[in-house]
Length: 178
Image 1 (cartoon, rainbow, N blue to C red):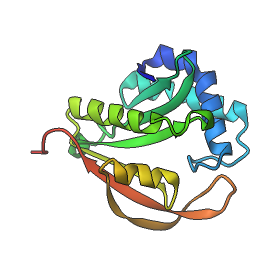
Image 2 (image 1 turned 180 degrees about the vertical axis):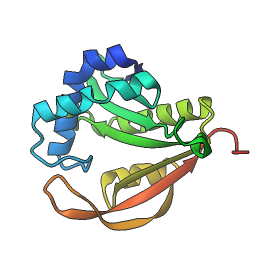
Image 3 (image 1 turned 90 degrees about the horizontal axis):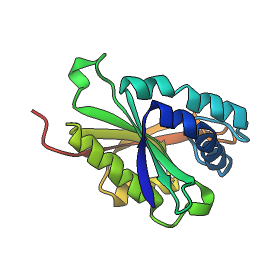
């Protein structure tokens, strides 16, 4: 697996592939903010809408590429600054997803490590995320050293439309905050 951080132009070039990944992941049951079946055009529109945030530096997106150069996974970091000066030390891990046919090969763990390392290199000292409670993703985060902060009941609908709880996690990375 090879990982690549996407700039605005590269995100545009990979929008259709990323949309296919998003649709595959949602249609497989992952709770990523969409209902199944996810329309491919809705997925394209969503990814195209991320370009401005990538260009502004408010969102960093990495992709995992298989040996043939196909996108098989992605992860993002969402930065709350410059609009929140008291939050410059933190970022949110967002949209970690792996295509169904690439699961079980360490893709998610590799993407998670890339995002954590990049966050630390950027001066981020605290990462946070939310994930559906009791999902396979929860096991990944716990095994990667993330700390459970708590559960919010009925936080979001899963892809079938059923309200589910979400678990909040955080992880300290990089140098300690001042």
